[in-house]
Length: 206
Image (cartoon, rainbow, N blue to C red; front, top):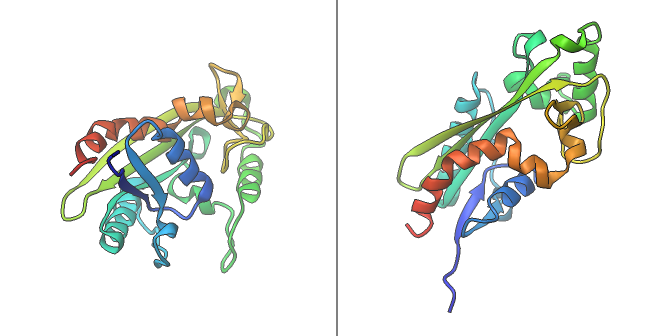
């Protein structure tokens, strides 16, 4: 009789992000589920000034609700020519008061702001901070960064967010062109989760 896998809850309503985390962690003995599968929990207001603050807030609130092992990430794009923007505001970069934004609108705003930036100065990085919250225990953190450049126009149909604009120089393709198999080996999120892998293994039967 096989042992039942321990739940690992992803504190996110972003279906594509949850699927990405599930794929990255597929080799670990956890049943990785979205928090939306466990109940109708209130949405966490991401008002922190850093990725770590937002990740901690999401993880702590989620672990209090579900009493299961929780991972919560906050991640975004940091563009050199924009002094690190959009940063923690990546998901709502083009938002207007009272209106949600879209990936297409965020990408369009980024391209408009960088219209006069030459190719050699279009450096950027994706940064991800993951918080692992343990019921009745501590919150652990890991960070991952992936360097690249911003393209002149969107390329590719895979992924989400700024993936169509983020070029990995060594491969000459955007995240959206690479597809999940390659992206999930080199991405900022994959690198952050790799930093938690040993801890996750310790907690799998706890």
